[in-house]
Length: 247
Image 1 (cartoon, rainbow, N blue to C red):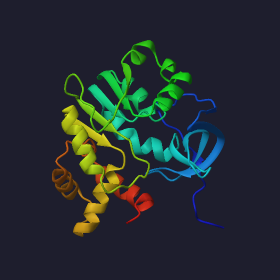
Image 2: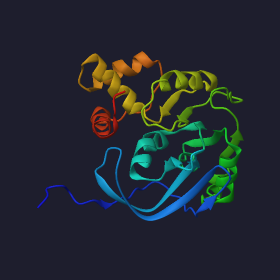
Image 3: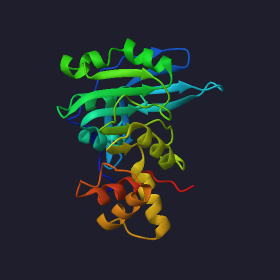
Image 4: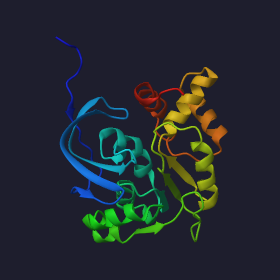
């Protein structure tokens, strides 16, 4: 018999909206009753009622842009759990990060910046934010704009950025630095930051420890959310072992 652990049903205490299948000109959303997968840092799981947002490609294929799989949820949850004050979310996606940020009592406003008006319309049609308590939904404003040029009316307390398709990308740090400068954000979490940290550690030939992670983050010049978790180096290592693919 195999020693591989059996997958378990993925569960989280974070808010998981209800989604229905939809199709637009360039995007569609589908829901799979059961799906086997692997978490960002957890093991094999069964995702139940997995919602997936995909973009139609010219050749007829579909590019999965976001899902509420264990990998996607775990790869954004640290930022959502730590959001405070005036929060800017770059990239609407399925509305999950904005919704969970708005549910935090410590968050006073959530401004979501999304470039694609069809995505904005799709999430509005699905009434994702209407599923929240009224006081949380009232915090959210969705703006049609460019994450690389958006400047809020006052400095942000928290910046959550997720505008990329691949989990691991080369120009991400520079792009986040631009977003952070434009928003004046005091704290930042960006999708895939653990991959960036792990890649740099490998390039330096160092182990992931509290000290080396702090050194790498200091190089980025970004006030990253994450180091306040005492097990953050271990979480980075778990995620990198599963998902980091060197270029």
